[in-house]
Image (cartoon, rainbow, N blue to C red; front, top):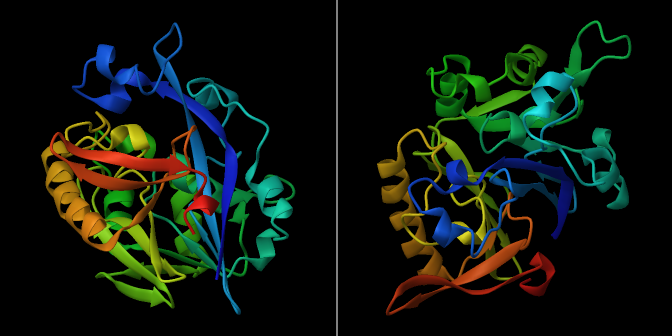
Length: 280
């Protein structure tokens, strides 16, 4: 098995929204913002290559949205989904499994692209099975008012219409070596892949924990629909992470790809952070 981080570009979000009730005087020391209170975030995916499969976890924001929509997010950086996959020696048609942790636009926008004459949509990964949880899919196609702006029908419905969508009902090992676990709080039915490699477990944390700066227990995003549920699920996750020496892989941390945790008298902290390759 081979793991390769896939950078798809960066975007900016309000720092206060990303850190919830935590005062700026605290979070800005570990994750700085600009003069408009905007902090820069990665949209980092993960390519997993085995003998017979090429699995991609999440796929960034895509390129279907109009200039007005994208102007709210200040896209930046030179990386794109296509170019980063190409650097890894992989084309869109090579992906066998497309795992969507959840269906917010910055995680699944690259799933679907315009067809050649832009008269409709087609799958970006035509040979892939698209995986997510039934709970998340139902949540996404019948959105609550708070999350509605994050669930874009053009990112979601064409996948079901293609016949390539596979919805999981419960946690389990649906792809050899990768266990899908589910966590609520940020959004219902978020899939968090646990990847077993070289006797270690790499966890793609998605929005359960967007960055290493979010490790402190109460540092929870305002975007989370049920922050107290996030807190409860994090407690469960942290217990497992410490017991099993999980390597945490971050989708949105622009500074660190991965980290390991340690329990201290002052609470849970990052023991070491850096490139994923240094941990595996």
